[in-house]
Length: 348
Image (cartoon, rainbow, N blue to C red; front, top):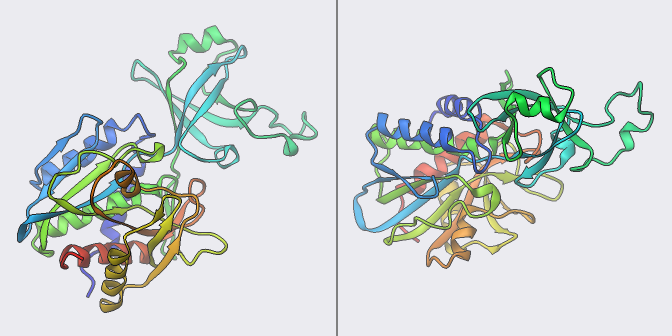
């Protein structure tokens, strides 16, 4: 039986992806989740690292579960202001420069102002550069053309831009009539939206927690250490709700929930993985078990940090991850339903 409404999940996702939050610049996104917790009367705390940790008591308070999803995204910083007034960038998170070429962006200045711009290669015009298509895309060739009348480094500085300013990428979110959700930053704001909806269902009495459960909205996952701290002492199971990676050789698709058996950190807990599979089978949840070769989650970060927990990873299938991302509403639905049934189940 479905316990969730994927359309309501989408409404959260649309709001979340519209809040710029590259790793290191997540305060507004965390404030959004904090306002949600307050509206649902869920106790929470903001950690020293700037993440949000919410707790809801379950029937059994002797052992706890922790679920996490991360609100931080890919992005960039201003590395250098060029003599012509344009900007060089340095990456935040792992992506390819060609995946953001041509994208609109925002530069978030130290004063709080926002300057818009476009990310381009420095040889864009085919009317001028014969071999522009063959040019290497890297930190030396990619630049930001800012939307201000500037012709020099000094004029750009006068606008308020400086080295170290954060740069966020336009999400361009779109929901299609065929049920697809296209947007940047579905990794991992799709799963944050899922967890917010699940919390809403818990507070409405539609889901009864078997165990006291913590919800960690982490803010540094894309740089490797978002969920490796602030894990309460009674936590015995740690489930990261992130994304399933799609590509040739993968079983994950855009229509089911992906259950990770192994990523670059190694295998996930076998009994927890089998438990999740059993729940999916018993509740008509479409699922795929998969291996992600170039991936690490908040759950694996917690294991590396030395926490003695059972760890797992699930998520909706996200096509073209860290680039032109897309998923289907059915994948959101199946992921949310698996989370809901897991929270009502026994420990492994």
